[in-house]
Length: 413
Figure 1: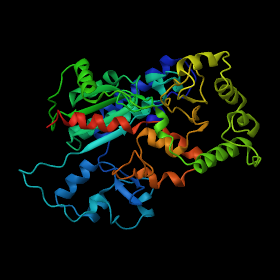
Figure 2: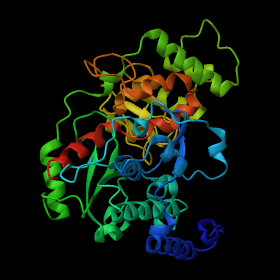
Figure 3: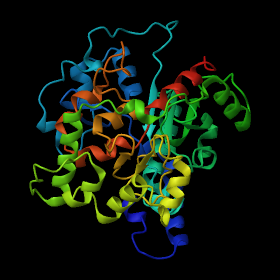
Figure 4: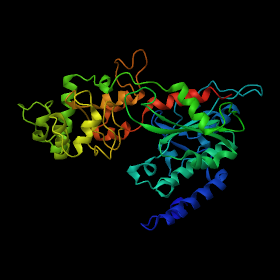
């Protein structure tokens, strides 16, 4: 149905806007039958079909439905049910601890956390905004939140998206069922030496939750900043903790990615910037950027780069982006857009994948950042991925989402 309404032509933007608006209006007005509560999907954790809507599954289990009966009620589609036999033993919804819920018992809090597609609200998507391809998926997101709220299957949702994402208008349609709040945040403003500005939003089901915080968007932003804003004390050098061998291996992998498997000469030192272009590690434009700034040869675009960095102190830049039009270089790690190639002039090398994950707030190995905390669940997944497969995982900072969630809890009951 959605594909039938989509505008797949290269016509004027107004036509795409009309098609997207038609999709959103239809799904929003008919969400209670368009969005079925018993949908399931393959779960990577439990290696089987699990319910997509935990609120519905909780209601079924508390009403006395067994795991086997619940599985029979799941809507799978495409014959997926025939591909998996039995109920996943380790799944939360198969626990034997579920009992009929007394009337005076407070039900579990059901929370949805979504990372919305941000391409159409960023320069990468040419600022297509609501006329872009991702708007249809956003409409499905809105319809799902509304349907879950009406059925009391969900109490609160959190979203993160590009800083240019207009939460007031994009999620404003949910005001009849939700109290929607939002704030602009960045890892840099929270005290982390990495640039990543995002729009964080939350929606509270008016039937089950009460918002006791500030009323206006301005006051909400002020309150959030007052609680979480921190000064940056250290530069991004603190993330460069890889051993010489790890850094060398990372350079070799970059080299093979560009040179299609040729072996670099054993005599070449992959940490010396003026050999990068000889080794094929960088494209000519990237090598020119490194060489000019390293040798204090200020030319063209490098003049702007030089002025911002206060050379020869710590300086970091994404070599895959234009120094004036891309992510901002300087003492903090630039925003990790597309496929980041973060270079440190003071270390004479590229950042390794694990260092970028540390910078984004995902602890992948025990070091000064993880301390007594457990490692991120990503630490078991990342080693199985190639460098190219890891690129999309870099893009969003986990440093910001947790403070927003804890802050919202201060004003909920």
